[in-house]
Length: 312
Picture 1 (tube, rainbow, N blue to C red):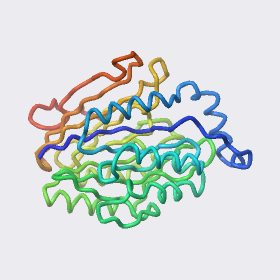
Picture 2: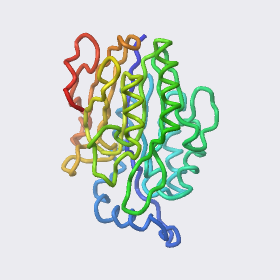
Picture 3: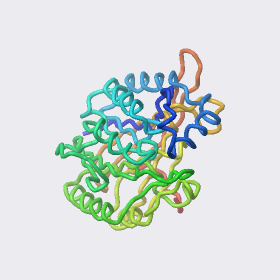
C-alpha cells in the first residue's frame, strides 16, 4: 500500500484577534509586541489560504500539522483554529500535534487540547489532556503516525520545548510494537529534535531523551516544525540513519527572512526496514496563477536513495 502524506506546520493563523488589556498581563505582552514589530507584515492570512487550497488539490491520503496553529494562546484564537481545522477536513484525515505558541501561557495548551481533540487523539479515541497522554498512535494502512508532545508554557523570551524521560519510555514501547508489526513509523513533534537545530532559547529540553530512543529503536521518518525552515537532518538509528524533515511555516511570504510558505508531500511504500520514502517540496511564489510550485524532489530512503550525510 502507498500512503501520500502531506506535512504543513507553524500556521500561526491570522489576523490576530483584538487583544484585551487584561490578556496582556502575562508573557503575551512580549509576544504581542514582537508580533506587531516583526511579523505583522509577514503573517498574511491569504498565503495560508493559498497553502490550504493547494493542499486540497494535492488530495493527500493524510495530512499532519506539527504545531503552532495560533500565536498568543488566546481563547478566540483557539476557537478560530478549531474552525480552520474543520474546514481543512475530517479529523481522521488530519493529525495535529501542539507547538509552543499553542501552549503560550499557562492553561492555553489544555484549552487547545480540548478544542482540537478530534484532530489530536489516537485511533483509540482516549482523551488527550496532558503530556502524560503522549505519544498517540494513528495507523493508516502500513504507516504508523506517532504524535509526541513538546509543548509547554515557558517563561518570557523563551520558546523551549520539553521531552521528558517518561514520554521517551512510552515512545520506545510504541516503536517496539509497531516495528514488530512491520509498520513504517513516522514520528511527529513540534520542536526540532536534533542537535544545534536552533538557538538555545528555542531548543528542545530533553533532546537526549529523544535521540536515545531513536538510537535504540529507530524510526522511518521524523517530521517537525518550529524553525520555519526547509531543513533535512539525520539521526542515528540502530540499523540506519533516520531522516528528520521540517517544512517552512505556512504563512511566510517571498522576501521574508525565512523561506516562503510550503508543503511537504511524502510518498511512503513498503514496510519498516524496507520503507521507500520520497519527498516532494512545494513552495509559495506569490505569482498569480502559480502561487505554489514544485521546489524539490528527492528519495529519502529506499533503493534509490543517496547515502545519508555523515552528520545530522
